[in-house]
Image 1 (cartoon, rainbow, N blue to C red):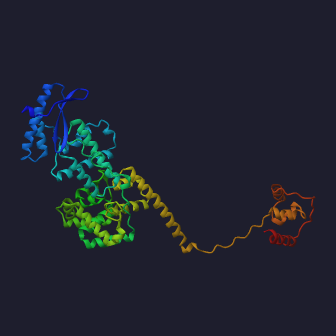
Image 2: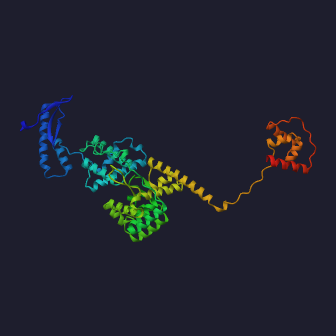
Length: 474
């Protein structure tokens, strides 16, 4: 039988023996990791004999992880190291000596995103890291795309998963290496980003949306009440639990970011919660009928919400065509518009960035910058509204009487009087002292051609001179 084995060939600087196999249409070199010909032959026989056994077993055993375990054990005599997905994140953090230096908020985002990936895997009956193949990674990337994550968030999630799987492979030598490598799961480039952001709703639009939500049923209406009154994302609103409510606030960990959010309970929310508690006292969810649908298929709830917005605002207003070469259109008005609207309303009330972060549950620099722009825009709008409002107050539009022109000397009037009258006489004309007149003459650089002596002027003469001056100079 030995004559049928492929030839052993020394290769590389170390002179290790290799042999060639042909599997799944591909030519493959196998490294025996030894330069001893006897050991290389024994290794070749063991490998090829095990492969034949595995080929036979694979006809009856379809679980790739079990086959991998059996194959490794047949070669090494040891069980393959299998890592549960539930334990993978802790194994990864244990290999990151500087991880604890990262902010708590950022660590929460990391753990939340990996937990979301693990939940998705469990729904597909995947429990081990070794079961996450390239195909599984691509399927998860496709799932993220359908969840309408922003391009930057999508890239962050994929890069984070790639970092985890790459580290696990280097430390524990996992069988599928790094299925989230950028050569397998491409990142979204700048040219592929969304063509428009979710727009905030104007008051009339918001009212139209809520009126149409009534037609969709009580569940959707109550879902829209939660969204519009808190700015919560669709998943968080649909799966809101009673345990998240206290007397005055809702306390949740945002499913998308893992950051704590604490929106206050408004009057409308309080009324709805009281009504719901009487209606569904035994449910863990505030909206059990919506939660049931969302847990079964989240896209169904998203589609129901989309129909309401299209009915209320018109499809032409709701959707902007993505353009040539793009696969999908962009929704500028959707359930997420409640969040954009809530943010803009906070900005209009000049709510601080720190308070807005606590209410909405975000801490990324991008969101801080976006809210800063909203604050600036709101302040500009507030200035405009204030300007228009004050100018429309009728009581302020009274007639302003003309104030009398003050009778005071000017350079022209003094120059005219100096040729006829002394400083004392000019002072009497203007009701000033001769010293004050002299100061003005000096300041203005005026000079008399000759010294003037003038007699005392009567009151009638003074009035006549004053009238002449007013006509000429005042």
